[in-house]
Amino acid sequence: MSGEAVPHQVKPIAEKIGFIGGGNMAKAICEGIVNKGLVKYSQINVSGPNMENLVTWKEKGAHVSIENGVTVEHSDVIFLSMKPHILPCAIANMYDTLKSPSPKPKLFVSVLAGVTMEQLENVLCQLEPRIIRVMPNTPMMVGEGCTVFSPGPKATEHDIQIVKSILSVSGVCKQVPESLINAVGALSGSGPAFVYLMIEALADGGVKMGIPRAMALEFASQTVLGAAKMVKDTGRHPAVLRDEVCSPGGTTIAGIHAMEKGGVRAALMDAIEAATKRSEELGAKKHG
Image (cartoon, rainbow, N blue to C red; front, side, top):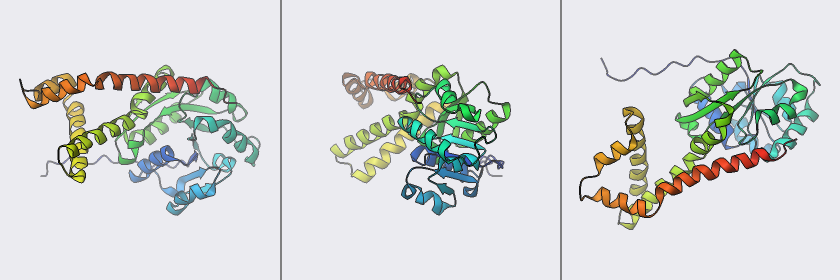
């Protein structure tokens, strides 16, 4: 018998999924659940202000519209996936284009950084919404996402299970108090961008030392992937794994010294703090 692991079987869901806002995050979530077989594109409804930006969705088989009300009416679960500052305009469009003035209560899933449950309940109050806040990240697209969610007081156990099904097929998914959403968003939501910068810098260092660009980028990305898998799979502290690579008087400790002198550790900590504070600033603004 082969020693390979048996792939986890995903049970498809019947619910129709809507996205108000068809940008990168919506695409990451959707591609993750479609690629895993949870839904088909025929179950997807997407709306946005510009039909040109929805062409790729339509080509894949999703139903598209410039009327947010249409997405709400034809979906069981609606992701609010626009930029936070667009929320008031998006909600106004939704109310203006609802064919039924009082559709049955829906489940709204917000990926909006900084926008609180209370703010969401206020702008959606006419629909008696059930709300769950989530903070996903774009690696969901390749099945390696890291997502947290926080259910609102009206969310049912079924709502929670549906959202967990959608988010967990594409990586790690954990429930957290709403008070942690902003910080986790900074770590896992913004974090990939910080890692991409590190990969680019590692590759640039290789190029500086004479490695061809394509090879340097391949090796840098694989090195980061391998290091992350070592931490995740072994459960050992990163400092312990680092020390195992640092031979006395060797090359690695010389490189670690250079990184410490350059303030890499502090810069990454500052990046998480800055992203968290920015999320809080976005939430402090009025959203209708």
